Amino acid sequence: SLLDIVCDVVVLLDEQLRIVDGAPRFSAMVMAQGKNVKGMRLQEFMPLTEDQDSLERCARAMTSDSTQVTAPSVLHAKLRDGNGSMIRVELFCVPVSTLVGRSYYVGIREFSDFA
Image (cartoon, rainbow, N blue to C red; front, top):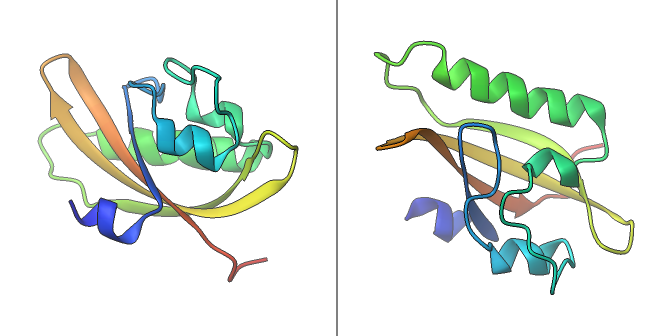
C-alpha cells in the first residue's frame, strides 16, 4: 500500500484505537521488543496529552458520518520509546470499514521538521 511506501511503520487500530496485531515493526520503533503491544491503545505511547487528544479528535471526525468517504488525516505527534526518549512522528490516519466496525490504518513516519 501507499502507506507502506511512505511510512516507517503501519499499524491497524480498532475502533477504540487499540493495536489489532502484534505490530513487530512498531514494537521495534518504540523499542518495545519482547513486549506484546496487541490490545494496547496507541495513545499509551504518546506522552503528551495534546497528542492523545488530537488522535481521538481525528478518529471521531473520521467516523462522525458513516455515509461520507473520509479523506486520510495527518497529525504531528511525539511517541515515547522504551528508553524514555521522544520520537517525533507524522501519523497518517486512514479509516477502513470492516465486518466488526470501523478500524484505522495508521502509518507512522519519523519526522524532524517541526518544533
